Image (cartoon, rainbow, N blue to C red):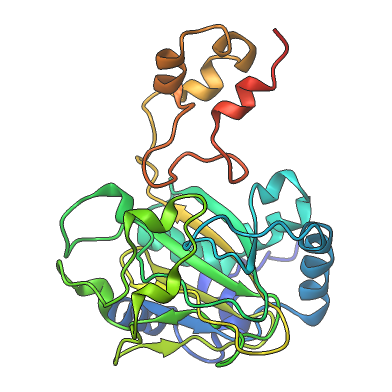
Length: 294
């Protein structure tokens, strides 16, 4: 009987590490707050992702505020739209970092595609677990990943990051997000002024590449000064304990929740924690109850 050969996690990830060890990659990630792996997906895999996104991009629904960007398409609720997106969410390289950073009980925190049209301006600077309100410096509560579906360049809006900023305390870069940046109808991003940070870099990547960033790393979407769109998909993960003890949205059927007083519905989870924690397909979750028959 032939002995079955079982690959170690490092052996399984070797094609993506390009001769590096996982330990070396983790050290870089911990030091700088981010890491990029180029050409993780094959051209055929990239084409499948792009084809699945095309109907939603063609719908051309633009962002509603400074944060989303009025020259951007944001596609939420991706796993409900096409099962092919599960290939990105479950990619072993991505999960190796998510589970090391957040534990094996980590959760999918968000998953959206972001398409920047020519003329889009820079996003406000932000870090992705800022909603928790906990003092910095601290360990991150989340991990953000960025898959390049198109080429991301200096000119078309490559994500701008400040290496090492995951270690900052209360300091902020000029142009950090404000409460009004999340308000529907507020499009005044030029009011931030000259806010390129001297330590920032643009995360340029060929199609099929993957960037991972700690939830405490300051970053923003870049400006698209080219004549072509820039498309990424960004699955994000959080620690497993960042949820209710009992999952009320599953424990109480929506048709029953629709009969409760508004405040009870909010306590079940049909509410938003500022600025947008708890959205469903980019919208307020109470809309799901409003569509239920009386």
